[in-house]
Length: 387
Ligand code: KIV
Ligand code: ZN
Image 1 (cartoon, protein in one colour):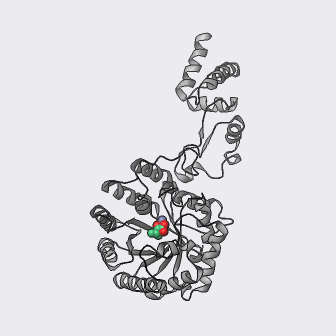
Image 2 (cartoon, helix red, strand yellow; image 1 turned 90 degrees about the vertical axis):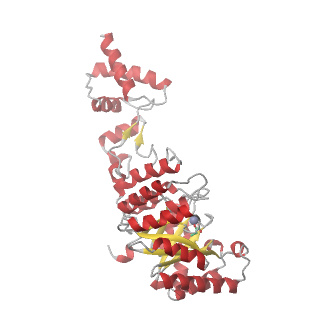
Image 3 (spheres, protein in one colour; image 1 turned 135 degrees about the horizontal axis):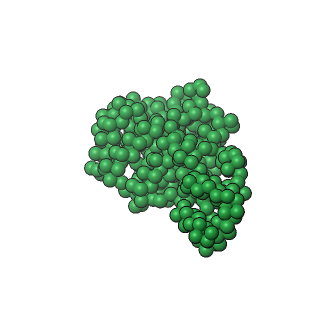
């Protein structure tokens, strides 16, 4: 591995993730999630938006004080008061970062009612101010993917000259597509003077279901920081899911030779904790962390899995922190899976006994969505009684 192949993982579960309506976390829950993210190897934790509330300020400050390895970042709008407040919160970290942003697309420029020149001046002033406080400054042109190309190049250059060390290119409304996402980063790096001296980041939203693909494409285009959240938590359809990009880079390292510092065996525990504290349950068929992501019910699949797990699994459940694949017993399950499941329960049957239990199991499975371990034990008990 060379450094140019290292992709930084920037987790914004506690900032962009918590912004999803209804996902508010308590102070204690935020500290707990931050510790888990730090321990799993996240490079940068965006811990909150310090000016947003007293609670957010306190959470970012405490997370900064406690962090062991991760860089702790706070968000600030493009004004000096926001940036000062952000610095007050993150400065306690071993490695602090200020992240400041402004909307640069025509629609977003209309909100503060600034001309292009006035906005360019604002960017210069605010990034310079942030850099005077902190060595590590990230700047984002919000809605970059709908910003005019010439203006985007101009403002990115201003931010770099003013001292930004990371340039994040947000797809704020989930509008881009993979090829465009890769091209945008590649073209910016080629066109903007000084681009080779900073890290380019990708920040994607999932409105069209392309956040993971767009983030990975941006890496192909030269981005070396992916902004993401656990379970893809985030406003509207959410953000790029950390577990998806990390596992995609691990499983398809052959065609995407990039490394992260994430201990993937910790993924499932963090996912479950975030689901609980945010109140946002993970859909059953969610990639990597859904209840069914490593579950098999059909007879053909179960039989294949029992012979060789690689038949139907491209990653091992242990790699994401699950103890084992789950064979779900239902009407599609076959005799081999029933025998294996009973063996797990400590029950070994002769062939003719297994046949009897199998007939009753199929009958029950036709009436019940899932046949649980207790149901199987009861079915075997009926066998004993009939003999
Ligand atoms: O989606 C977005 O544009 C953001 C910025 C604040 C980076 O979350
Ligand atoms: Zn966002």
